[in-house]
Image (cartoon, rainbow, N blue to C red; front, side, top):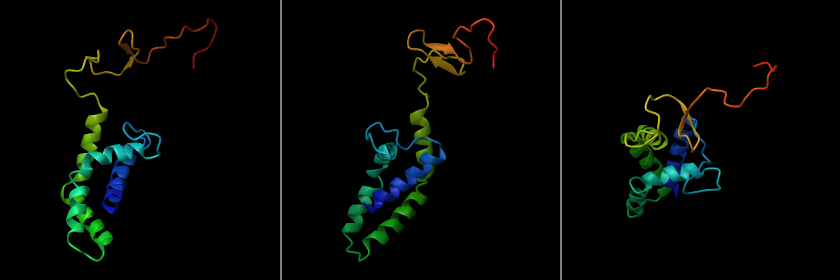
Length: 134
């Protein structure tokens, strides 16, 4: 639990730094930190689970303190923050070259589900005559 709490804190700091919504969950839903839990699950099998079993077998007297120290060191040495940033950017951007986005120019577009990519920044709602713009 201590190791996972440390991981949640690290993931939450990255999510906040990137301006993402911590409650936007895909697997975990309905919680204020759903997205944090979703992303942290990607790293538990590599970081916190092995560490928890390793420390449980050592018989250390202050397992919480030792866990926090070891997790901190492992996160730092493995550059986990940078990895989380890259993984989030990959997950949340359209970088798949095979994807048919209908947007070959790389410009911003609106997706309407019928016509595909529609030019952004265009007023599509007809204005009434005599009305001022702005």
